[in-house]
Length: 254
Image 1 (cartoon, rainbow, N blue to C red):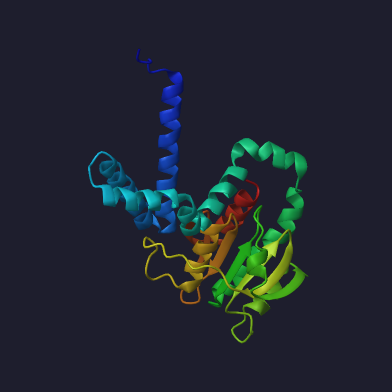
Image 2 (image 1 turned 135 degrees about the vertical axis):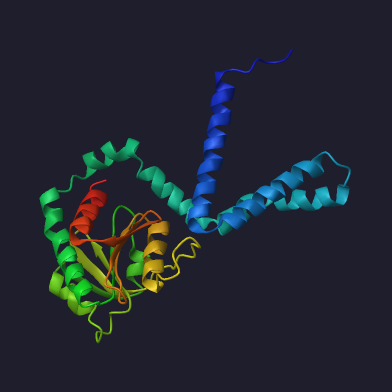
């Protein structure tokens, strides 16, 4: 007796489709889409081999598939980390975060504005800068690549850090809860092919950290003086000081 197609089956198929779509979009955003498509091809090939008489090929693929979970974790460790971060920052869980920690909007304004003022000044003088603002995910791994400062956010301090003769001007500044944690930090570089070619290493690093964490990164271009902002793998180019202020306030209050 055959079972009828019910609502549970529909939900099951819909969830699998949604998961595959999410994985595809995550791979596309991170530049690992070719790896994802390669895995899909191997799975299709494995399904074909299962109904064929190719015993040797089936044996080889059975061995590969049996170790597939470990291989996938190694290949996609950054994407898995980002996925878990997205789940934890989901809007359905925000009420839990707000209950556990309720940041004061007025306090945030006190250290958002110095960032905006510093970016305005550096944009006028075409001083290159890369500032990363931590949200819920820890950036301790990146903090340890630079020089620890632990200083209150101040626009003049930021300008001095990124002054062309400063030994720390080439790296990134990492900020958390109104404190400059470190300067001269090394960030992961994005290999997104959709990024315009005229954007340099600072912009690729800003996009890279936003792809791997939920941090907000701000870039001042040394060539043009334009201000950009990156968040969750998306980059916003040529922002005015007002737009940067609104963007930082909006993203930090998510």
